[in-house]
Length: 111
Image (cartoon, rainbow, N blue to C red; front, side):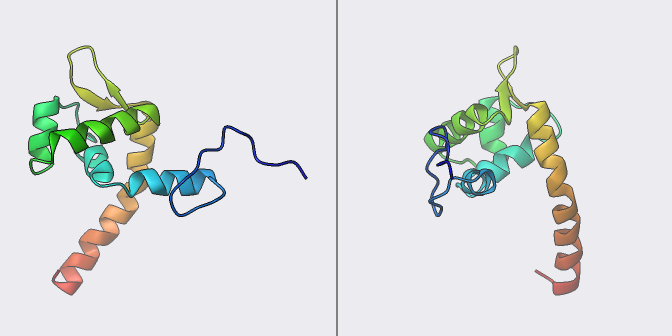
């Protein structure tokens, strides 16, 4: 049996680096999901994105934006704002059933 490709990156919580584990690792990092969520409707400048993310640390925000850009989910537009790529929009669409469930759960549980 062949070993995994050398392109497989090490992922926190996984020795295999399987795609699902790599994705969950990236999305589990502080502010990653929030950034994607805030960009779901329109591109935002760094300043607007930081405000939308409850004044997240600029250093952490930039680190996450870099990671999300490298992963192909976010791009820097011509106007200087950050927006979702086609892949990023597809990822956000996969969140919508979970979002709807969370809204129903909140209304029933009072959270």
